[in-house]
Amino acid sequence: MARFAAPCLVLLALAGCYASSPGSEIDVAVRREIRAHGLTGDPAAGRDLPEIDEPLPQLGLKLFFSKSLGGDRDSACVSCHHPALAGGDALALSIGVGADEPDLLGPGRTHPDGDLTVPRNAPSTFNLAVWETALFWDSRVERLEDGIRTPDSDFGTADAEAGSTLSEAQARFPVTSADEMRGFEFVAGGTNDDVRTALEDRLTDDGRWGAEFEAVFGSPEITYGRIAEAIAAYEDSQSFTDTPWRAYVEGERAAISEEAKRGALLFFRSMEEGGFDCASCHAGDFFTDESFHAVAAPQIGRGKGDGSTGTNDYGRARETADRNDRFSFRTPTLLNVGATGPYFHSGAYANLADVVRHHLDPNRALERFDPASVPMAAGEDFIDNTQEMIDFLDVSGRGIGFFRNPTAYTDIQIAELVAFLESLTDPCVRDRDCLGPWIADPALHDVDGQVLVAIDQDGEPL
Ligand code: HEC
Ligand code: HEC
Image 1 (cartoon, rainbow, N blue to C red):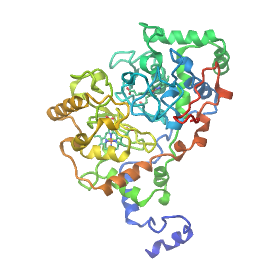
Image 2 (image 1 turned 90 degrees about the vertical axis):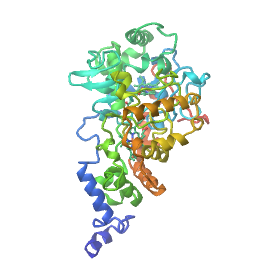
Image 3 (image 1 turned 180 degrees about the vertical axis):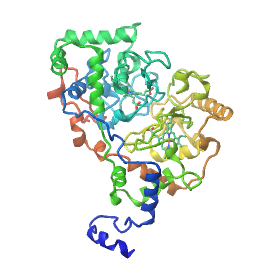
Image 4 (image 1 turned 120 degrees about the vertical axis):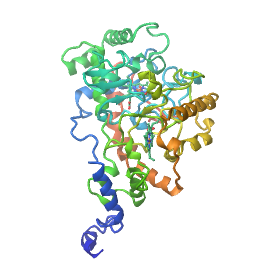
């Protein structure tokens, strides 16, 4: 211990110095995992990302917050991806068009007909630029060797209109989805391109957007390609990676608690070494392999039309048409996961401890799961949907290892894992002032009177 007395004296003011001196066993053990997993702490390293105050992301911000891109002018991208809600909507399942109060976001946002909720949980737009290959829970926007495949192109085939980044390709689709933005009357019966053309015309005819596009692109033409490019630049500027965990990886030993360090060991170590091998799927500095696994998440809500009830969601199999992919979903990133709940593709769990317990023993968690615990979940089909999933995973052997071989865990281990997960959250995403530059200011960003100025359920500005 004497060896480390000197640096500790210097750092006496820093909490945790003695506990985490370089020689302390736990730091040595966590460092070993960091090296073994090749982590740098910075998932965005090497990427040339736009800054929010540049002209293109500024135009993107205006479009992202504009209800003019919603068919009935009652839904914008921000309706489900507000920065103050960690780039999501803090709802289990999103509500898009026809909300009782269109500008009320987050908990308390309701729809007169619960059945019209969107069938999946909204992932965060934060750190979107870090995804290499896969967007959406089923990766229906994905990078191929020769381009980007989207719902507009056949499986395995690049979409010539997709643009150059995943963010750009994705931004072409929410406006075409009836329950997210388009509504049920706007260009009814038209193709995705008909919707995009109608929106180009709407913005052009308004007369006020042309100058905005001219300032950025050098000419006033409003094409959906330009709209997508600007929105993508705004999203790509949402880089929130300054986590306590990153500071720890970069050498600041007191950046995370002892509890979180024990959680890190459980997260990274293999089962043989006494860990839970979470990093086998939540791999690398972005904590995802961008691949697909069936963790047997509870299926709540109206689903995607699959299965015997028509309310199930086959996930990746909907894209590949391979039954072996049923109930598999893209591994989510865990960056900022402390703020991005509810969790799973169906938003079934509101807190991280429940998610971790579910992973370690899915069958037991499903037995205990109460769909009534999820506001807005249409619960009646839950039992049938769950049974169908369990039967399929039993027979096919496709469920994750823990599904067939549940592992014992203690409440202390759950708390340690949750402490580790919390350390993956950038404090900026919980700080309204820090997020200010990404939130529309009506004095600056309202081009045509359609900017969405969000309020919460108490009527306070978000
Ligand atoms: C009604 C709510 C709603 C609106 C409005 C909405 N989204 Fe989403 N968004 C979602 C949901 C739900 C998903 C997940 C869907 C899925 O995976 O099947 C999603 C997925 C995404 C993703 C993929 C993120 C990832 O990690 O794969 C991006 C990016 C995104 N939306 C951006 C946008 C943009 C840009 C707009 C506006 C043009 C928009 N969204 C409008 C709810 C919404
Ligand atoms: C076999 C791959 C795999 C392993 C191992 C794994 N996960 Fe996951 N994890 C996933 C997938 C896939 C999802 C999304 C499932 C869904 O939504 O249906 C997920 C979701 C999550 C979520 C919710 C994130 C969100 O935004 O919804 C958390 C938190 C999480 N995992 C933590 C862990 C922890 C902690 C461990 C180790 C105990 C672990 N995972 C092990 C694949 C895995």
